[in-house]
Length: 234
Image (cartoon, rainbow, N blue to C red; front, side, top):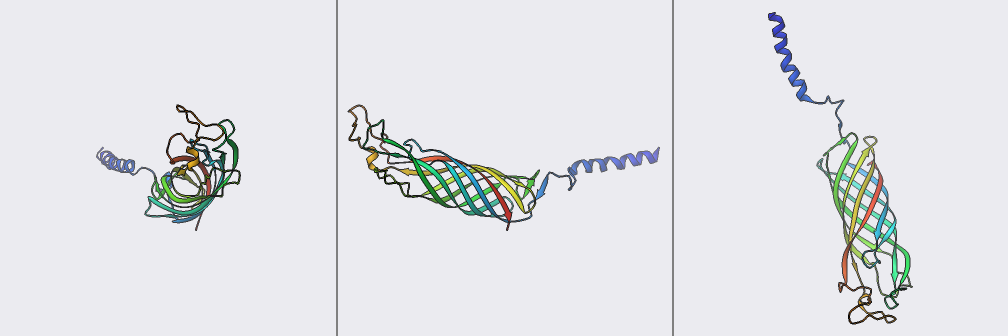
């Protein structure tokens, strides 16, 4: 009886300690991310609507390449370039309201950016996933406007920022797949001709027929983008 009681008392703390340990290392859903830098390629889809005046970037595909550097476990930095083959509307500000929208033309965008991301699971993956949230800042340039656009509108070169949410799926310690969603914020600058009454159909004292009736010559618009990518340890 005495020996049985002694064994029982020894077993209780041992059981308690085992319960506190949690997962065995080989069974844990968390795994260390061994590498600190990656080269990442991506393709995506831009879902712009052109903004209120329809002349901003619309739907198109994007391609990008960037260098990813993981900092102190939680932080991750990136430096990269991307391009997007979008479309935009051509507006003839002097024509009548019904026909001044001349349709869509190609608008190629070129951009360079830097980004900072917060790895939600730190320096580890959870069931091979490494979710993150972050933001990028950069410079984007739009290709020249077609000759058919007589309004003077140009996308030009501008600063932008892009908050993002996404996750990486590690196939191995050296390779991952990426999926993220972000919104590209940039400022569209409108020509003065958009605020003038069209010569072929001027407005009245109570109703303006100008392309831009807000009086604002610039405004920020958000352009959503979804991207998938492949990263390889560098």
